[in-house]
Length: 228
Figure 1 (cartoon, rainbow, N blue to C red):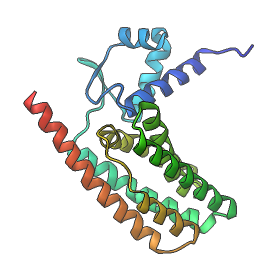
Figure 2 (tube, helix red, strand yellow; figure 1 turned 90 degrees about the horizontal axis):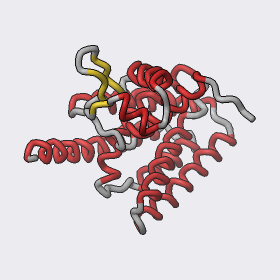
Figure 3 (cartoon, one colour; figure 1 turned 45 degrees about the vertical axis):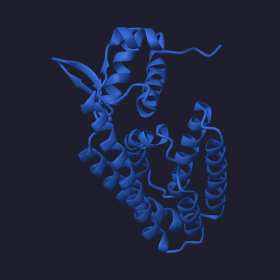
Figure 4 (cartoon, rainbow, N blue to C red; figure 1 turned 120 degrees about the vertical axis):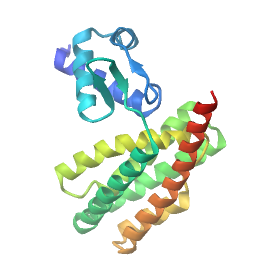
């Protein structure tokens, strides 16, 4: 039997918390009471505290010694900053992947796009919760495939962290029924595997269009909050 030690348990709680924060189960700004979370994840205070501290280091949780812990809020300013940094990092990582990637990388990009396309079509047919989750994962996997041959551990690690933050904003569109543009992603994948320099322009164009949609959605969320 595999023994689960305290460190492993803290890592499992960390991943569960991260998934629930990114997926909106724990929405932005919500207070995180350890007693509630301990019951939710069926863990004691020690691994929960370790997990929360790790996510605080990544900026997904705010810990205040006076008011306690909360999921980091979202804002238009943070949205702009997050997507600007993500865009800069993704461009660098894709360019490096194009330089270093082999035929296996190109095949991985094409396969990831195929899974993403099928998941998107399935969600358009039936927007059940499990299909939304599958489509979201497929979208993330496609973008990850574009950068996976960059050959830089630090670039990949930093990009993963900023992608986690960007995903919180993306969920605003997913839960509102706004889909992803398949043509944009198909063009990105094709430009990457063909090593076309146009891929950089496509990345920024794709980012700009999606950012505009997110801003409109975020404005709507804030208006609803104010009315309530």
